[in-house]
Picture 1 (cartoon, rainbow, N blue to C red):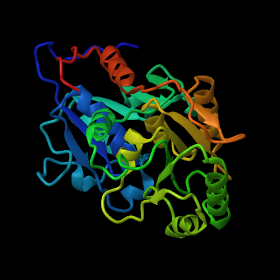
Picture 2: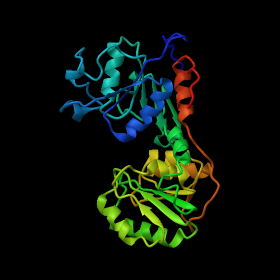
Picture 3: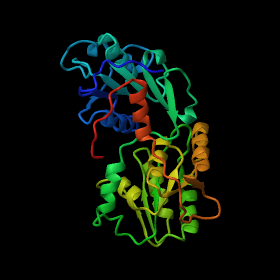
Picture 4: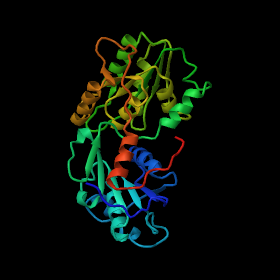
Length: 332
């Protein structure tokens, strides 16, 4: 598939990202939209009931289907929309229709509805989505390259000052059947206490999805002599951990977290919560085949790993398939 673009090579590409504000969707859309155009616009949608209930199958909230300046999708319409999340799907389709097809719409992840109305759909390999307007990569897009590079130069950060080598531990939360309970907290703590002996320090951060009870149980069970566990106070040290850890241990319940971890070049160990989604297990298996991750078997030791980052590949494929003009050189 190669859809002809109406954008002349000398024109500036106008881009919107449309989500309902969920962090996982925002991360992916911002990564792609910002590389398509540094002046992209963020459009956050918040449909009312019942339109929020029936998304992505129904229409956009009628309140937003007008030229009302308070609508997040009021014209002038952009050249490209990059959308993600079920509530965003009807809005992207509406913009395409309202622009008489001049706006090209790209969906990140399976829209689950109205697939044929999208000019292009990106989905991770493990979703096994196919179609004339679909392409896939192993990992998901993100925009952390510059942040990680900056964090590595910051010698005043608390993670940078920890004794090395450092094991960074990235914890997700209940998702797709993954269980986060006291038993898992106890098992993870035991794993770190007994198997992380090669590391002088542990730097641990939970995510927004991690239950507070889980964090407390983990803290109470850790005995490693030098460990830092973020308690939610102040800025999340997530980027600092990705930047400075010699090795990473990441729970396998998040495609985004694992994609970001393997982009750093550090060796990544995978911790599988009980009830983890089968498609994420397929993703882990593919990463292991590529030499980017290891399972926790005998112990946790530093290892050389393949570095994988599909972000620019995804952007380049969008430009190719939509016949968009080449990106002007930018300093990343």
